Image (tube, rainbow, N blue to C red; front, side, top):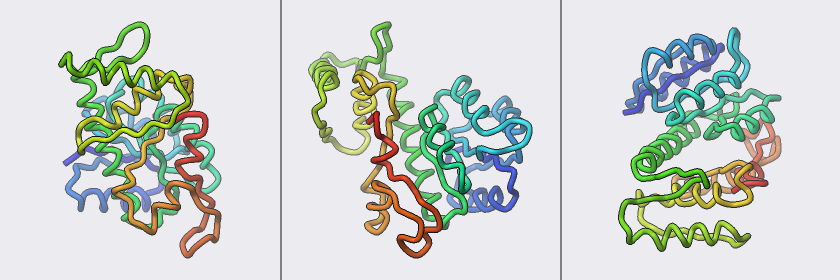
Length: 235
């Protein structure tokens, strides 16, 4: 079970998200604006924040900035209405995990995105216990001297433009290692976009990776940029 905070001034959207995630067994808190979200963050710890971009009192981008500053371990998913996708992409560049476009296509997309965000949160917790930072940038320090060759290999490949394939069992830190390669590389200023392809249904994989145009298939009410395009300039 995860503790999830949802901030959206549209009651219908807010209630729908809350109902789906509560049914999944999560502890969900619903608020109607950014200031109420900040108040909630000051009272309790959350694993995940879902926030609309346009809200009264405190907007979603300001909420994202403060959340990343004060709760860096918490993942953030941005809710984006039609016409605000560019803002959602900017939010990802500022540290949001991903965005969910409104109107929502259904609960499946929501469940998948939340699952991925919480998986990422778990990897960040693992990294926080094992990683060591220094003035030269991020450094993986797994405590075991046997990991030194792996860390050195990651540093070497990060200095190149080579395509990198990391192989390992689930939970061994592949995404942590990939993030380190990104942060050591010349693309560190760009976005780092992680996609769990194994968790995607076959009929969603192409759209998730490469996006789709409005009307491309039934239910495609808006143009959606794929993860490959969102990662342009980064990893």
